[in-house]
Amino acid sequence: MICNAQQQVPVGQGEMFFELENDPMAIPPVIEQLMNDLVQRGWEDELAQMRLSLALQEALSNALYHGNLEVSSSLMNDSTDPFYQLAERRRSVQPYSGRMIQLVAKHDDDRVLYIIEDQGPGFDFSKLPDPTCEENIERFNGRGLFLIRNVMDEVVFHAPGNRIQMTMFKPPSLEDLENNPAFLSGMVA
Image 1 (tube, rainbow, N blue to C red):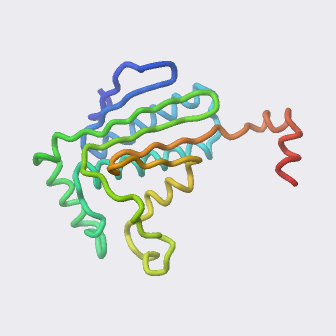
Image 2 (cartoon, rainbow, N blue to C red):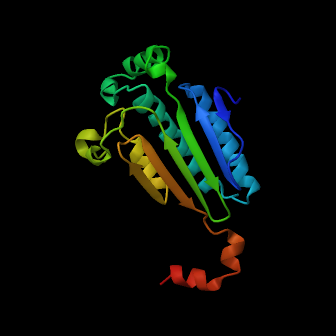
């Protein structure tokens, strides 16, 4: 048991499964465990680790707050207080309190894949507002999925909108670049 997140026995080489309760404190230890596993697999690029941590934090938080607890971002228009107050109330009320977040992590030598699924009703991912539009710039919310899309190499949403699949390919190390001049010449074209 890791801070209200239960890791089951790895389901395969480089594959882990977590089930998280609706507790925001369960998220950081899971991310830390996943980053430690990546380092053991040779993913030592700190920028890649930071990008992965950010994407995981955002996706797991979205699953918790918007998915399982069904708290709308519209509650954050002027202040974040109503949003977090409603979330805290719903953590102990059915049907919200019984919902779990599932995370499958697949780590291998050249890519990572994370599948995060909540038990909420989902959302229409094609109707997300663009957080870079002028009318959205000063809003408290609406940047999580934008960040995920910009830090991960591939992002896929699955209907009904309660499951996200995120992939990142391992960036080449300095040693890889030094040993492969053709790779560098392709970048300078």
